[in-house]
Image (tube, rainbow, N blue to C red; front, top):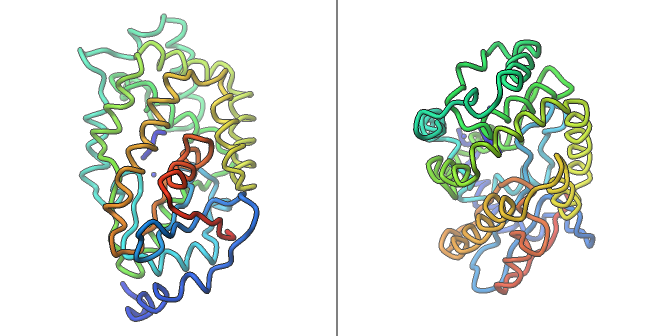
Length: 297
């Protein structure tokens, strides 16, 4: 989750690619892809959906040629939040604080808090846990996953998409606001969030293996397998949390789709865990009458 880490080359290229993108892209028959074309059901121009992973080693975060072509052709690019709006990004530090002056050390015993604090101290984050003591534990968990990446240089697919899009002066937008995302996390009890943070640290070896396995599945581009594995890792995600964090958001994004795609070619880039499964964005759009085809990525 968590969350957080465009001068034109030739302006005429964008319109040219927009007209020709359908014929130039390489489509595949198997459903194992992170990049999908959406057509039909009244769409004047094709739209595209891409599954991202928020934390990756730099070597795993390269953009494919087809994805670059889609970015160049798009009129607008949508992420989960507007990543080009620094105000949105920075507001997360204020909005992410727990209510009623609740702190992480209040949610854990002294020994449990010490184990979390010790992890931060030993993993070279350069950040004292006390600086984030008022933050919702699920947001703090993102720092744990940053620390266990098996590389010095990390990146996210979203940042690379945005860097490439800047070359073409693409409009960046968000499907949600930071305030909305924080309100979603706020529905998960703080004690539950704190225990999940502690568990990820207490079982750091298995957490590393799970993250390694998830990255491998992501690179295989098997969106159904990725969703299934992510829900089962860390002891399993409850149906309630899955509905809050994934299913309801997928439905909200699908409801926005017809409005934001009107007479425009857009690229929607969201976490790959939102694409697969019967309640995933791909299947929801199919049920709404759109035609979705996997693109070689």
